[in-house]
Length: 454
Ligand code: N7H
Image 1 (tube, rainbow, N blue to C red):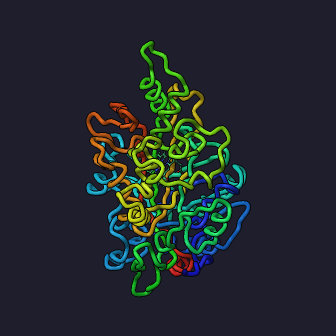
Image 2 (cartoon, rainbow, N blue to C red; image 1 turned 180 degrees about the vertical axis):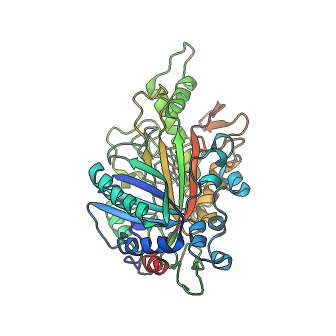
Image 3 (cartoon, rainbow, N blue to C red; image 1 turned 90 degrees about the vertical axis):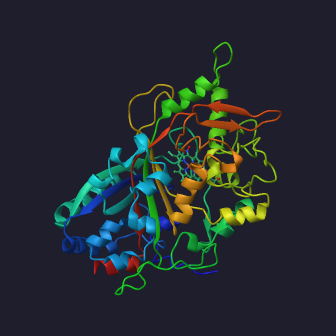
């Protein structure tokens, strides 16, 4: 097993900081002058939080789009050493199609990341409370204003206190892989007897991956090791229509006399997600949300093939089963798990916007998820999940269904809830999630960052 060079890896790769630093700001910047930007970058590079640091008050990380590297002097040949989706960006017609960014979600309607509002640099700032966040943001923004080489395109905020749930009402961030070599595999195994350990090379460049290879490093003639300890960061601003989600659950669960019980709405919501609101997996708790959940680690200790092969607990097309089918993709569970583990991502998203007061009443305010994920190979990991699993109408031998939570809708989209003696099918699923912005970034290692600034 490779030893991780954690002092050269940005801290965000190894930690979400969510426990100690629940408040976050994301600063989206454009480079207006390369030389001034480099001067600004030099001290920033020295203050980036590394995987070895254990900061209490705040953490700072940084990532770049392909256009940033071009602005900073990379040639077209240099850029070819990066992954194709990163070179292309998120808005090309091909990527729009495979990500399902059409209709309201089309890049033309985005508030950032599209051709008019292109972004070069992403600064990720995390703080222990709102005051510290405001203080550190002000320092960063003053630096940007006075740099002479940068413009602030947008400031996105996210805040989620640790006990709260995401906007649809579910506990999130449970189904995460454990990176081999972080030490967490033994800690988690000790606590729960289970850990989904994935090779470091799936998430950090320069290490062996699940294909038993090491991905080629992005490089330039002057910086042959540029990609080492770096990773690709996918950012999608996903707006959630909470009242539409809950009103759909209400309408769909009305009985013959027109009454819809909250318990039935919650159960249908759980079938759509694949977990109860507490995070407990439906596969282990098919009938009701256990009153006292066992804790997040326990919630991840399950697979589908043995306990729930037909989807009677967690439907085949539920969000969590599509985005991580575990051992249920093929007839052979071991082969399935091996294959699925080549398509994993580390999710680092946080909710934005205020909680809705009444889930059934549209208050016309924007809220959602700043979806962020990390992976070494955007095509094989993030894009594969989105295209081949979430947006695939024939996933798991289903017909005309896409992910009921995040999937792109086709005409007359349905969602099947497998049951014995007969499955139920709900019809005309509306879109609950709209893409509002996004970009593919590269998050370099600390040494690479210093070379870039130099
Ligand atoms: Fe999803 N949600 O809050 O309702 N997601 N997700 N996701 N998601 C998961 O297991 C949600 C999105 C994955 O390992 C849970 O941590 C929402 C995208 C993966 O078993 C909940 C949005 C992609 C998993 C949500 C959204 C994914 C997962 C259950 C958009 C990738 C882990 C909690 C607004 C393309 C599956 C948990 C596993 C779980 C929600 C988006 C992927 C509650 C609201 C775009 C891999």
